[in-house]
Length: 238
Image 1 (cartoon, rainbow, N blue to C red):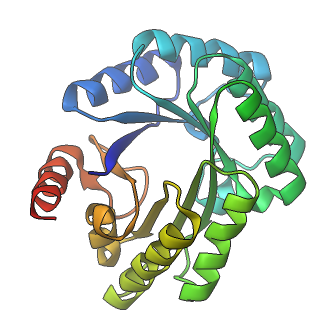
Image 2 (spheres, one colour):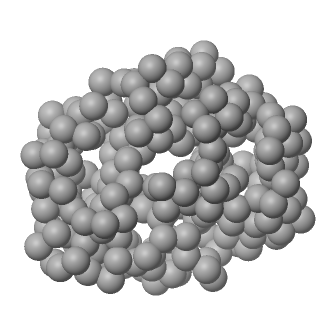
């Protein structure tokens, strides 16, 4: 059964801790710290401090560090090296379990961060987001394969679905990549037309799914309690 992830979008340490405790109480499997929402996060020291405090608030839940760039649906724009500095600080903090690295940052930077993550016992989620459309099936498979070849432990692909056929193409691409890569994948078709892809991942190869506890971090996320019930029903049927 796919594991659930809830994104934490707090603007300070207190709000992050509150959101983390609420998500854990609601039953999430994993937490994602969306650091691009944080008000005063600008230096590596800020990252290390806040990551450690968040770990204290949520000592056992797997924690993903994500700074989502504005051109990939996030809140802030950062130059490549500034982005790398924040990711490196999170990796070195000893407080996170996974780090999200954006594929569009370039192969050299991706490889560098993936290598550092592995050296510190952190798993790498290499990600690609298209908020405008759903690419062709072949192109989506190519993207997932490229992430894998760059060292991703979990390739992540999020695309925008404008109809049910888009969602089906995303699921088809995921199934093809599952068969060829043999590793965990995290894929979704965003928007109302893509909800099925967030809930039926066990059938086509997406091993994790983002859910909402209160405010959603992306369009089409299902409330955690409802998603968990649906995931369980599908798991038992499958």
